[in-house]
Amino acid sequence: MYQVIRKPLISEKNSLLAESNVYVFEVDKAATKTEVKNAIEKLFKVKVLSVRTAVCRSRATRNKFGVGLVKYWKKALVRLSPGQKISIFEGA
Image (cartoon, rainbow, N blue to C red; front, side, top):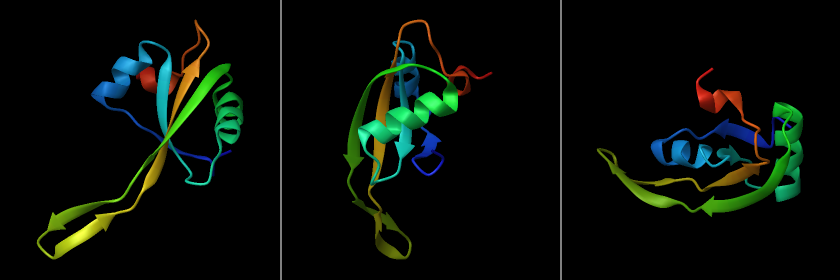
């Protein structure tokens, strides 16, 4: 469960999604939608309606040492049933 979910992604765009019961997490690259759903339900004790995943591909980045690559990672957008919330996104 803790190997599937890496960290919650908190940004302005994701905060707007949280108002409509969609929460965004960084997950393991090999995790499936079913594994993500089971991990969220066990960890936060909520009912998940759907899971959407997106693979964020690597991109070039520049710094004073030259050009490097940002590794690719996977994010999951989790929709909860109405009336349920995850407290870490609420600031509590």
